[in-house]
Image (cartoon, rainbow, N blue to C red; front, side, top):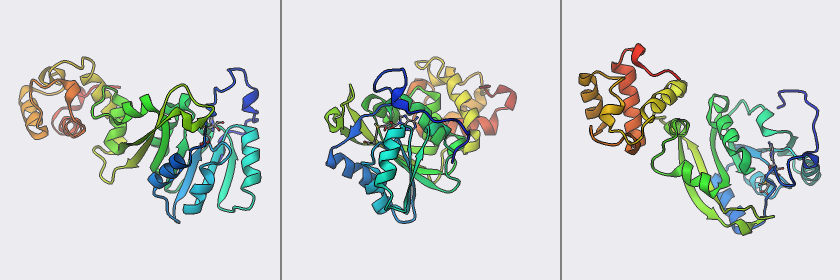
Length: 278
Ligand SMILES: C[S@@+](CC[C@H](N)C(=O)[O-])C[C@H]1O[C@@H](n2cnc3c(N)ncnc32)[C@H](O)[C@@H]1O
């Protein structure tokens, strides 16, 4: 699984503070149960567990799944987990930084109580081109991030792109008291599932981000103005009619399906020299 042959460090001895690795260990049985249930694991599933800690999620996941790859950066935690998992052939402990780990070549699911500080880096890895075999996952995230990822509309072009290809759903909130030590804020369980029919082809992701960033440069602008640099007025009329977009509608209020329909209209009707560049 390793990409580089780097020497490992014992992370907790590093400089940036006592808990910069987000070591908030989950101890509430109800939340553990909820998370595992939300993962809907079965015997054919390969699970990548991110930030396995001392294994509070590893063993319940291994009871249901075919295989669990438990990644943990902290050498002490990884040793504890390896010792506990010695009698469990379905669990493999990988002591490494998840950002350096090569993702499984075949389909896999994720179970993770994430280190909050690197949430975006981890999602970028799973939901971008590197994660092409990622199917679905359940994640404990900071509640603010969970709300941002799952709210109806978003002004973030990269998040919009993710939501063209994956469905995000907030499953439950998790009070900070369910962790030891408790983080400063509450958390939430978010389920992310690859759509059977993505709204746009995954290979168009970069182009879609450029398209969304262009139109969202002034989010309150009316849609007719936001897209007029891309479409001629005839093309705009057709694109808006097909996407059920009103000319006066603020670009920030477009639904996911409307974004997708307008993007497809650009690919179909607008000449490439009018497509926004990333
Ligand atoms: C919120 S704790 C979760 C621990 C355990 N899964 C639980 O629920 O109790 C996050 C874990 O991620 C680990 N971690 C932090 N940064 C990591 C990284 N870059 N790669 C892998 N693990 C990391 C921490 O050491 C910590 O054990």
